[in-house]
Length: 310
Image (cartoon, rainbow, N blue to C red):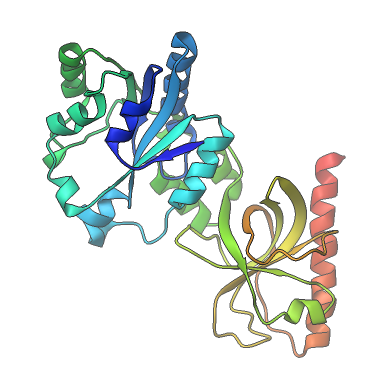
């Protein structure tokens, strides 16, 4: 998937462009409805579907005191999620205080001035431009003037309420992963770089990949059955998220043991999907007791995956 960072980049396309506009944190089911609309328009016209988003999240610039501490996906993770659903390109515009002062008119004209953009899909409550002056009615008027079609999508509902990134983050914080997955349209996963740790797991007979934690929302601490995805491969495994009270109890870490995998993962971007919470984190009297419990945890995780096949 092509990644762009300026509206001028759109001028290089020779095909009609169909844009989905929004923040799209997590690329949840509501976001996919908007993106799917742009994809359908592209299929009908033989053009390309692109997602236009902003980095960082606008609320972190406009109202940092109200901004979520953690997001559902970093920009790089978002790009990989979009690539999985066959989006042709991602235009991630740097959101700064200066960018926030651009009027709705100037913003839309910067997108469509090269004539390649023939449709724009948004959520029906989407607002944009300085002071949030732009809305769907504004966008439709601009479309009539500048020659592009506007498709406004209603919110996607779940259990009687609209799906939102805020609701999904709360479900993840609560450990309600099935609920989060229903709203996301996929199991929740975080993505991080595999870095060197203390290599204690290797000495215990359970080598682990130490995942560098970023700004993505984390579920409750404890032991989890997980799936790992990286470089076109997928593995089942067991993971511990927490402060490792038996070892030092000082730093929150995320360590993943992948079943039937022994090669070096250092430097790989690993996506880890939370499948089932097995137990809370606990302190053991010694490393031998910890080793015995890890073996039990691994067996329990394997049983989780075995139950999916039965």
